Image (tube, rainbow over all chains, first blue to last red):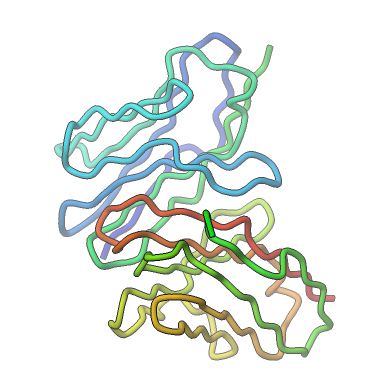
Length: 112
Length: 114
């Protein structure tokens, strides 16, 4: 069975500082991994996805994530936070032919 | 349509009534998912349809919940005898074939049970 653990329920950063949102996955087979963002009262937007190609994946809005099989991790990073990055972030895992399973989410707060 | 379409966008219903929520996936997408998101919480998997395979119903919380899909198009999520704890956003998503392809979400159906 697959599972996704987001290690931090809430992360607070200052504008202009780096962002790190942590995600660990558990899967019997090589999964596809995703990061989604959800702004208040808005739908889910795909930030980036990993599907067994390059282990460093670049997404939208300056975000990127690195797949580390040895650590079963897929942490999301951004070099410099912007106020507009404040939102809820979800890590998700998908094995071929199965449902997409989400972590519980990390709330990112950005202060000026 | 261009994206995943859900209706109604908002629904207020009385406790004990049945509700139906509709999802129109992106044309050509064989995989369809339903999720529930309670206020301030994460996404809870409900059910997954993939082509003509038997759906994965492992996430349905009780027998009051059921879903159907007509071929590879419209899906309906039905909640019978609604309870206040059913109040949530119900999100539908679709992808090309469920094999790591991007999964696109609808805007959700906001259900309030009073």
